[in-house]
Length: 304
Ligand SMILES: [Zn+2]
Image (tube, rainbow, N blue to C red; front, side):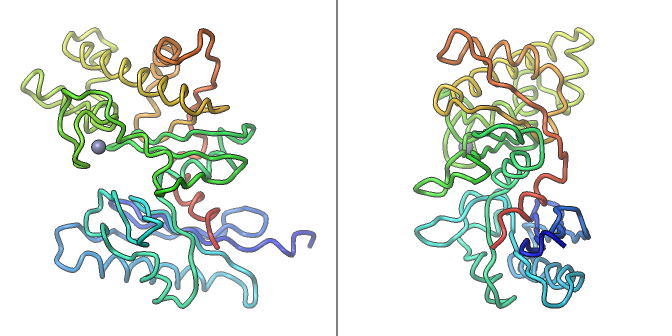
């Protein structure tokens, strides 16, 4: 037993539809995974039910850890903790906003926990165990129904003065764009998330298609799908080129449902090169390696 000082790592990923928990053993192997549903925003006591489910899941997982073994606990959340107030902010699971989620969980389970937003957990997992493993500075992007980002430097998450470092999805790149839930207009999230692209299609053509239908239509030469999809690729290039000009990371790792779109890694990369402030950008733009598991693995790695 050479690794006796390494702890077990318990991670919980609090997602929009499910709460997933995992334990990594001291050799970083998955010991156990469990899931519970996330109570819906609309239910009157949504926040209390989220707390109950998270704490129940932690207690159930803890039973699998041998008596006396060290264990860290980390929780990935939609939204981030404001370091000044300790309240959760910017969450699209609305019942969590302005709530002291970390403190309430710690009070209930009687010990400290680490807490980071889901994009930071994704970025950390990919930078330690996934596609960004061989790089020092990694920018992680989640492109799914929404769009988030995180910055990992030497295997640690950069928090920023306000806890919003890497919150790239809410940089406005189009003052004439559509309203975003955050109060801005034309945020990157409204341009390159699945939900944003679907809304843009409906606004332009008066009918609804899902993102995968738009991608399929582009590939078979459908005119409306091609118009919207080319705009999506251009916005992806503009947004990612801009972030590379600011951070100049060693690699960018893409996660979320849209990370499976092959065009991002060829046409998309060509557009990034066009928009970034350097004539010969060679930043690797990588598809994630951990898939849906990155959030909960990252949560395990941010534990305390
Ligand atoms: Zn926004």
